[in-house]
Amino acid sequence: MTSYCFLDRFPVEILHILFNYIPIPELYYNLYNVSDYINAILIHYSISLINLKSFLQYHVDFICHHIKPNQIISLKLFDDIDNNGQSELFFSHFHIEQFTQLQSLTLINIENTFLEFILPNLNRLNHLRSFSFDTTEDYRMINKDYRLRFTQSTSILLNTCTNLLSQLKQLTLYNVQEMTLKSLSCLHHLTISECSTTELKRICSEIPQLKSFNACLQGDPIYIKDLSSLSNLTWLILKIDVFKNQFLSMNFIEEFLPNLFQLKHFEFQANYGDDFDDGKRW
Image (cartoon, rainbow, N blue to C red):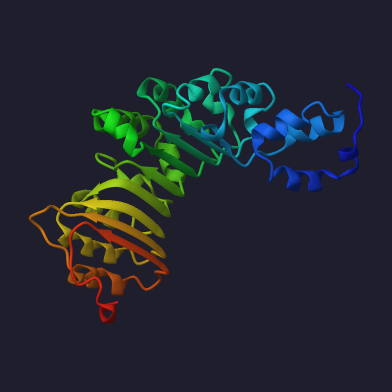
């Protein structure tokens, strides 16, 4: 194809900046084959994010025919009722190990049968630094065995991806039960959807280098004092679901919060408690 258009006058650097403001489906659907010059730029353009949740079904197939996996920096796979099967369609074109430049991977509501083809090969992604693997609340309501599914998938991750865990900077999981946390030696940012007090103690003991921690804590609130050992925290978000026969007061917060000298952002939510509206104690 030999064609020319007005956009051919722009340098590559300017077009890359412009491309960053255009959704990926629209970018490739509208600009591919406009000219040889634009095609050459699109082929080598580093795609900051592919989010399948925002893609229509025909977008997925079209994009897969016009991109290379080594262009993608961040990938988000999200399966639900509205876009069920898009992740499977996407990976009918690619294998996860082809995403050699991938730095961030998010897997939401992905079925175990499909995960078996993804998780064992994550060790091959040498640039991956952020990994999110979780389920939504709607998914948990429909799939009552989600805890068992998650445990099975986590087992695959632990048995096959030791190198990956040691290189991660950011991690999001439903829980960290039965995980060996000491392998997360470089981890700085951790998000846990369901965290027991036992898991909290292990996190504080085995990952003291954390800089941000976001968790929904369940169980006896007395153990939140262990957070004082995370002295490097700059960002802390806590949702605490205590048992109905237990009570959460400002005293528990005062046991750890004054020790977090570097903390700049703190969010707190509790289903039971008292004294939190006393401004003098904050």
